[in-house]
Amino acid sequence: MFKDIMIQKQQYKVEQPLYSAVLGSNGNSVYGYCDDSTLIYKFVLPKDFAENLPKVLSAEKNVQGSQLGPGSLHLSSHHKWLAVAARDGILYLQDSYTLETFAQASCHSYHTGGIGSIAFSLDGHTLVTTGMGDGAIVCLRWRSPRNNIVNSAQEYGRALSISLQSKIFDEDEALRKMPAWSLDTDTAPIQGKEVGFSF
Image (tube, rainbow, N blue to C red):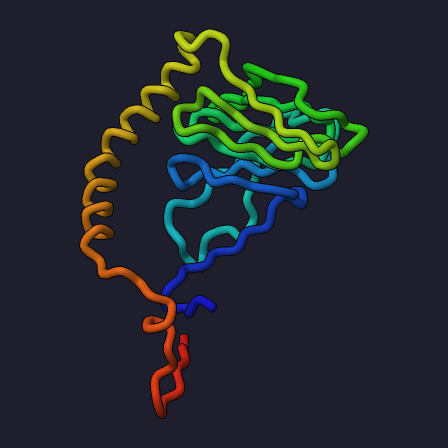
């Protein structure tokens, strides 16, 4: 359990109950999928946490999500695409700034519960969905990787991969230098002492 001194918590009321939410790339916007309709809301969080700030968030924008709600939202790794997955089985990709749908694909049948989960590849070129009850995985890839929409995601993935390479190398070196782990010696109880943790 987190201590109050470690986490600053601010709670807000919203116009409609939300089924799912994702935090935007800048950390001050939240996208929420309504629980009792098929609408997606975009909220802007106040920059400062203070007691005198309003406790009700009004939606900056709302748009149609999917045909059958409620659904879940997922943000791409480069934070420019918002994926909408719901019971209708159709995957919708929206621009995270304008919330306009720029691509959609039928992935799973609504008869079996639609889409259960989504995963983006780091470069945004591949998406994977699972069905709720059809026992299927659907893999989607862009046909034209030179498309402007896809290029920004691929550039982000490439830049992130390059920036992480030195960190991965350092971590691999540290792991190589560690002594071999043995189940018998490393998990033996300490004689005469109780081992416990407190938070």
